[in-house]
Amino acid sequence: TPAGGGVQAPQGLDVVVGHSLGGAVLAAAVERLKPGHAVYLDPGFQLGLPTSGLGGRLFWAVPSLSLGVAALLTARANAAARKHYPERTQRLVADAVKRFDRRMATGVFRDIAFHPVAAARPAVPSTVVLSRDSRAVLPETLATALMGLGWDVRRLPQLHHDMQLQDPAATFALLRDVLLGG
Image: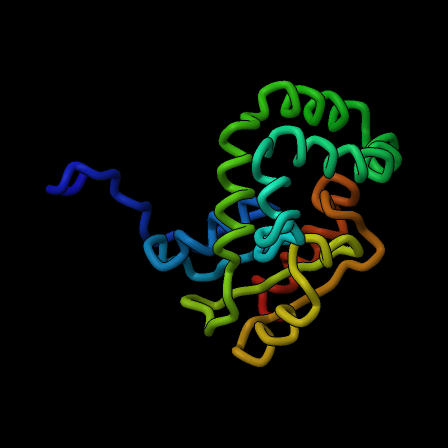
């Protein structure tokens, strides 16, 4: 640990990858990590959650209920995609859902809703990979702005939000292309 008692961020990483909410967390940490390349898979940069007016106050009055209802609205599409995952992947996802820390996630959702990732030049070479569901986590206007600021924006429009689970081969082929200079 450094003299101040905090935890030292790992340095010298070739690449770091953040998916969904992890993409927003990575965006906050990338300057400290200083990887050779940052990859954001459908990153939760700007969530379409209400933050103002009566709707915003009601939504955040009981966020566990509000976010639960929002999750139910997408559950059918997620379940349809997940039923085609290999059996082992389905078991791993089910186990992850059991372990999911809803309170922590609520805090991250709130932070992103009220403090979205703004368009800025990337701190390190950065690639955003968008799925067909990406509008829920990163609006097209932000994707366009990021491209104008030097971000590499790629798309896997045939895949859902959990692209790395739905089609690992396609996702990793795109990552290989990004990292090997394609």
